[in-house]
Length: 206
Length: 206
Image 1 (cartoon, rainbow over the protein chains, first blue to last red):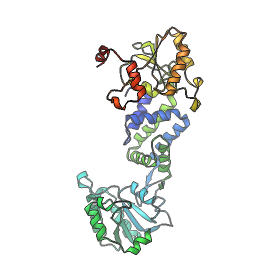
Image 2 (image 1 turned 90 degrees about the horizontal axis):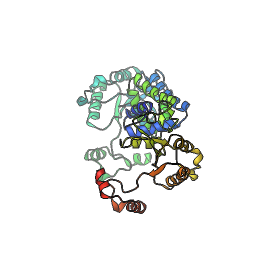
Image 3 (image 1 turned 135 degrees about the vertical axis):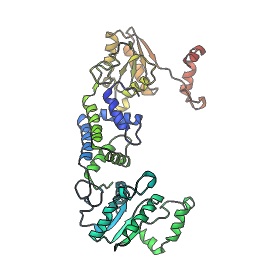
Image 4 (image 1 turned 180 degrees about the vertical axis):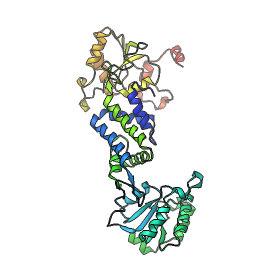
């Protein structure tokens, strides 16, 4: 792309480094910022730089945090004895947005995947076991993706936790709301039959 | 969207102000930047802030520029007597990318559109007339979009320029390469018949 200004060209290149943003979109964003007042654009730059500089990871659950301990782990209104194990920060946000979960989290920071060279030692598994031991956690919910890697991780964790006095559960697998039976894969359909619910439970959740 | 960190929430909100970027995409970009090293993110912020602070608009053609006069207007290898009138900076970039045009530009900064409250006085028309008068411009090419507003602008400019010793042309309208006749609108098809070319011209351009 030929732009007659090095300032613009550099800004376009920076935007184009972001995932899913090509040169054309990057140019559109830069030309949009050009139309804004300088203080607004300075704020944009500062907020993002400050975010990266000051962000911390919670010592307890490894979630992103503004302080040493995140506000979920620090909250007295949440059940700290119920810990939901997730792969990434994004999953925490997804579950928080349901507004249905009142426990705490534990972010693994990935999933066991030998093909990508990720073993248990690269993940925050050690701290989970410690946490269960030291904080009297009563239930650990495995909320990882239903893939082979996810199942491997669940299996590994369940072995690590099996001698501790803690209940281990996984989130339900089944047909998604709005999903159609005929398009569901066999595995999901089979599991949804095996784990069928009494009708009262289903109607209660409606 | 519930995020447990104000730093991240602010960054997401800043990204979500950009055109075509919603909260979910903004979050994806922010989480991507979180994975980068701090100096890289600082560079991102700085390059964009610097761009907005230092960018200038060329005194002659109103294109974006790193200096008072842009490198197209300052170039001795380009034909400064041939001026292509465009609506916006984006059009300059589009034409430059064809690598087929060796003249200079004049950016109007918009198009006459009474419905949006944009009249000739809001556009860089005065400076175009001055430029034609003072710099002995030989040809002005109107390269504005083939819309009612575009045609109004062309008509207005042609009246302003009609007493000056300058040739006024417009870019050709016609069937685009790869376009199919049956899907072309009547106006385009009619104009492409009226402005038909000798076959030699066509073959030369191949």
